[in-house]
Length: 341
Image (cartoon, rainbow, N blue to C red; front, side, top):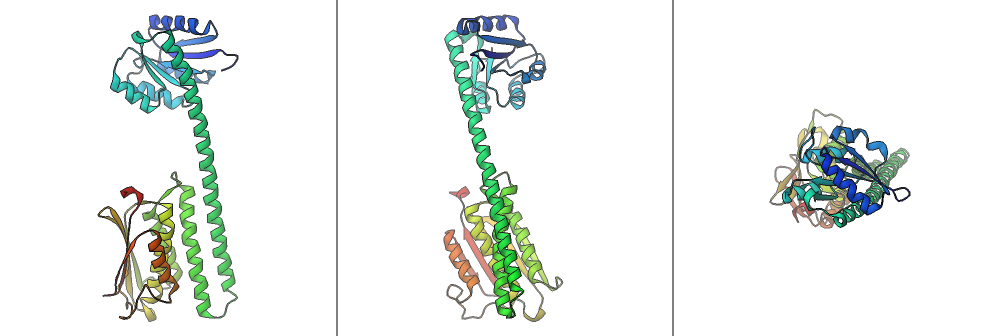
């Protein structure tokens, strides 16, 4: 508002109702207001750029009827407070429209000067607060996207540095350690990439993430794609970032372990990656039909950094591990997410 003049758009085709509103506004603002009346919705929409403070909207107009009238106006004027001024004394409709974003719902033959004054005052104030909050939310989302983007870039730099450093190493076992560390960094970078590209900055489509990550790992370790087949059967499940990052590392370790050890000397085989919901929990399984572990192996107490990571990270997400060493190797990770809490 400028110079305490309230600028009101009224979209109303009944001249009598428009005159009554005008007289009430005169008593409230002592002529410190400007009222412009449009008889059709399309006329009001054409003049939204004229810097109004508040919109009074009848729901039944010559060119629009019911809640669609409000939705159309609200879509085109999201920053302006809209007060419904109608002859429809319908409580359910009122609740519905207010829940959709209207600031107030006034029945024509029930309003008086005091009610009208409060409605305008509080509607403008609430809408200003809403707009400020929306700007604050958008600013925070922008900062979060930038944070995820920078984290992703930094992780990719680490991965590239590990790759560069490995070229100076002659020992093959040491090179493998560098490659494994490089893939771990890339698995985390991929999650942050998914987050800053998503409309949801807290959760990612983990099914899509699995497809991308396992494909990257597969082409990193498999030279002959005719020998080893990768089967991916996953649901498109959205998981929280606090679960996605450790679960991504678990997936990286299990798939890498199968590709490196399950099929020695060029033997053929298959690896299955499964992600499903199961009894209000999630099941991630990585299994292969390779040579399997030795009978006396204890995956929870081993010198393998990868398997120790799997165990520790599963504990971190409060999950359970089911290990099967028959007809190859199978690791099942069973865990919850807040969706099922």
